[in-house]
Image 1 (cartoon, helix red, strand yellow):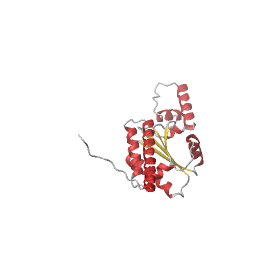
Image 2 (tube, helix red, strand yellow):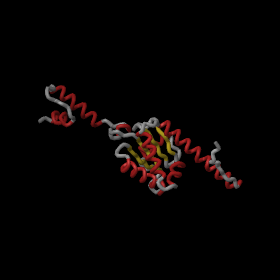
Image 3 (cartoon, rainbow, N blue to C red):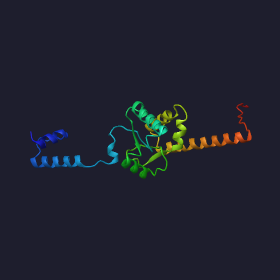
Length: 197
């Protein structure tokens, strides 16, 4: 069997009836494809992936950042049944780190990004402050990941997820402001739950 024939068969091409010239062209095209550098979007396996996550961290000597990376990788591997992909990119991986930092205009680390396509053209940014808040409560980060991924599986848009995150942030900030005001003034909240008919 010729090398050309073996390569064509390996590529899944039905070569019976192909002329030698067509077979040679096919092999040259396959060889050129094998030498081509992939795009970022092609690095992901072509499965039914619903969410893509990129975590940018400034280094492995930061325990809080490594904890986020461990939880994110564990969650993806054990709980999403292959429907999510995660990249944890640290500063020492200069090429990937600089590419993502520039494309995402990242200003602080760690930063987590969520998208529904591997190119991550449209994405949601989960900033350092929210990551720290989620890490401060046992299980909150895992719950956040699961709820967000489930929303995507149920066809919620990135815009809707982003809106929910902004709403949650506003509620959190309002709660902080209320707590600060309460501590300064000694105010107490009361809600009248009695109904009058």
